[in-house]
Length: 148
Image (cartoon, rainbow, N blue to C red):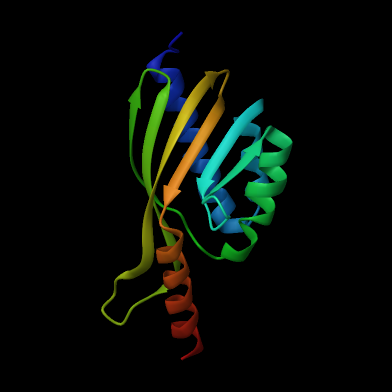
């Protein structure tokens, strides 16, 4: 069953705004309210199999939004665009470290998310894909620039 496009769009807009607030105050855990009790969140990581998976809202809050976001305090994750197809959302965003290069460009690496909407303002699934080695490189570059 596909939910109304406007309902999905409104939820996505609230989610993007909640992300902006989390960037400002570092409280990523508030985003857990956007997931169903049995949601699954998967992202490309540096684990042995290359993927990290959290099952259920509480594990998403504890693992993805608290533990895994902690090293990225001060970073922003600007949303660039999204596409809605039925109950599926695809978004593109940046992993943006603090500061800028001498030429004015940002320290950043792109990412995409595929999200499945469950209704009631919640998501049942999210799959994030980004190059962890590029993010690591961006972090190192930003950290070195901050020391200068």
